[in-house]
Length: 415
Image (cartoon, rainbow, N blue to C red):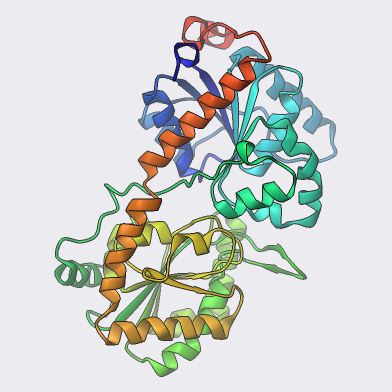
């Protein structure tokens, strides 16, 4: 970073105050590199807001609800967001999640800020309607940081040059997600603590339950819980010593209702081979209990397999989005998405390696793969480099405003 790029003020706009955990770690890295992140997010309590306060990152309630409805309130809120950005006077507007991207682009038009879009999940790009719109709107961003190579390819198909769509994973904290030092002993303890069978083949799926969305011709949950639970029936009939551990609750009221519906549909409460935990603060004990991770998503970025790999747990993943990038032939398997039979066969192949005593070796390679490709610290420093480079390019076309650390907005003086 050259001296001209020191002390950038970066307004991070995100549409949730609950999820988006990566926003907090990226904001911390920006701050540690000498910049001033300010996170604009929905008002009220939430896990993300609490985490940002814990690490000392400033937050500002968003005047925009991130709901695009054809009402005067939408126009008024967008104007209020624009006024907020003018008061904050950021060098960079960095938007996360698609509703925030739309709002930030509209609200910052003509204000001269450098715009950076961070894309973690590709679901919106898999909609033909949104793709048609995004072909035009993505050109309002000076940089699109794509969470997967898959997403970068999609933006390439929309006409963005490779320089404007670099792929940078969200990654995983490999110093926190570490393999057990004494695998057998820690696995047994984790299983006992979770009430799981102490012996046998344990498969884990870690994923929130999102409200069903239109996928093709039907409304489905994007994480593929229904695909796994259907595949589990046939697989478990052949392997009675297998146990499925699901970890994750609903993201909101509709997500909770969808989880309840899945439990009823697949009679989970009456199935002794399935344990479904609600969301937990720390998923590492659950990974320690497992022999295999499975991610059957219908749309996904990199998702849970990077955590599993860091914990030395191999994975079966679907071919959706960026999931195939999370494994290689030595660390896991890729099966077609939304294919119950293929998923059941993937579980069977993994079980045979487990029975032969080879599955833990595959897990050890998964850890090395995570260290090489999904180190969050390295990825976040790359993200900061890219933002600095984007601002520097942008500054060649516009006069550089004063360094962020030397000015204060009217909001700050009011405080």
